[in-house]
Image (cartoon, rainbow, N blue to C red; front, top):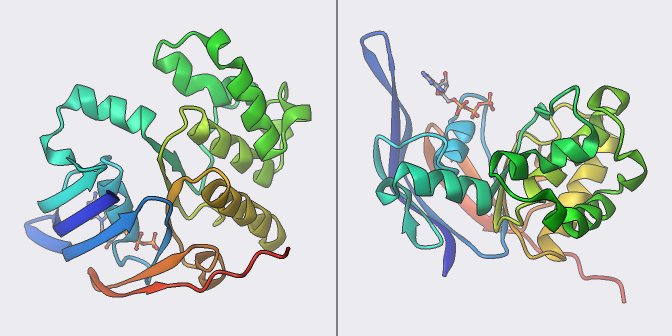
Length: 234
Ligand SMILES: Nc1ncnc2c1ncn2[C@@H]1O[C@H](COP(=O)(O)OP(=O)(O)OP(=O)(O)O)[C@@H](O)[C@H]1O
């Protein structure tokens, strides 16, 4: 089954009396285990598309299916559950709570969902290990570098073990070395943990960490190319 199926998706915004069509009849699929990079010029509708895919906004027409479920037919309560459990988000600005520790920030989605935190202790340790932040688990975001804060945001997105993670310019705020480390982490999450990833990016270099690139221009898809994967060294 496709992880994501987008069919004839359109999105317009009202600006004063005018209606501006930002996405014009977009259709594509993302298979399970893909890591898709969506590229295109600024203002081309990339973030708008990502928000529609993640159910954070509603299309003007057309549909988005996640695991075969049409988001427009999902009731609000089920949608909130889907957004919390099946989908993760990582944004350019990490959106961490400044006075909570690293581990409390990571567990915040569990607290909001009324989960028993002790059931997730093992999971938390495992995720802290994946992101390389075990030693800093008691620190607060202001004691961390940008790259470390983004690692915490990634961990928070992983705590519910979502199948799909949406990334909106995830390294847009980082220097190139730190950005490359974070992209490597996403590659690992895709390859080793089998998560489906969809990122929006300006950068050709970070797009190439993905398994395919979709290019958007003037609200339409102009191409989808599958990238050659480097052979793993034996
Ligand atoms: N809520 C809104 N109301 C009105 N117009 C909007 C709204 N959200 C986005 N737009 C417009 O839609 C267009 C696409 O915006 P979007 O943020 O999706 O582009 P983008 O490709 O992600 O750009 P960037 O790369 O600069 O982040 C822009 O012209 C923007 O002004």
